[in-house]
Length: 443
Image 1: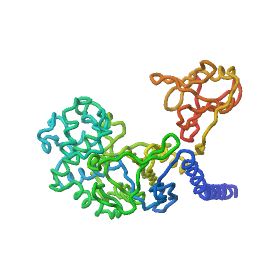
Image 2: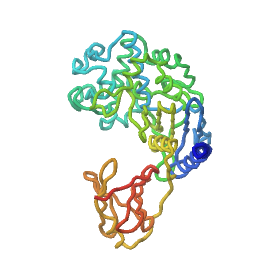
Image 3: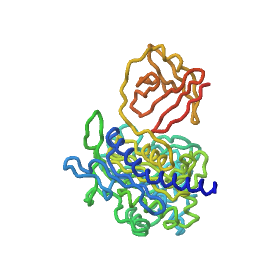
Image 4: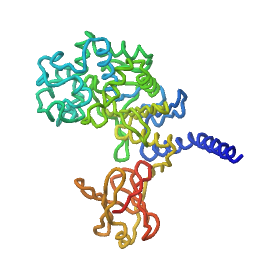
């Protein structure tokens, strides 16, 4: 009888949690919209069912056109997983091997005999990232041909010897696009449409073209200093195979599930794409990150491009997909995606709000100073001139402003707090980051 009661109680608790999930998500997202100026669309799907799908603010502010789930957003570097899959399609068809030297396809590329396709895929080639070259980001509104774009970085000094380091490089994925065209004998766009878009039935995904008009395409903006402004223009060809795909939340959810379920590649090639075999690659496989959130394995990637920010994650054990697309360039959408995942896994999350500083007795600060450790590292709290600061070696001091005698917020507006609970000798400290509460252990 006791066991029956316990089981019944657990069922009721689970039902209560499930019934409160959508209101919890709605409350959190409303705070992200009003406080952090989230503008865009989010989608959560689990086991084939939509758990949550909402859109916020405007697809076109000048015309006051609302964002909708059918809006087409630039997805930036989420493009890279599509490019990686096309390379592996070519390998599956026997048209190349990821162990091939790039000199086989790009005979005049410097050190091409030392760089493999594999190195381009997982960012271990050492090739300079062209978007990090001084002045390059600002020049991307000019149209470069593919060869001209490659010329901007091909003769730059290598970041490290091929295979001896890791550095995220958009340049590598521009070269992969060129290799796809050489090995397939087709334009990158044609091969993308044939092998992925048409193959798995993506209705609202394409490689953005300068002279094309797309139905329901979302316009990009940035929010800064209390106001909105249109984002700077980028010539789509300048991001190409590294970042020029446009898509919707639903198409991206179809794509990532199809990839994992071997509907894009064979099981062998899918495993290769999703396995970060090189310790130097920091969990990066081929065009996609492989890690875990709260010990739940996931595959994911973010993307950022003029006016837009994107996040796509799939949690295979729970068969759950989270997609966040924003047309506010300055919004950190992967933080949002991570937080939505934490809510789905039952974490209590504190919605963002705008804190206000108050005056407190500086003498209070002395009991808070000291060195602390967390699961992810160490921080030190110091007081100086009647103010509390967080000190991290190599990054200087950052003021923690008092919201009360026991709660302090980071002065950089990063939505982080340090909170103290109890009294000495049982005083406890906590870091609240992204809404999650993490204990700080004093050394």
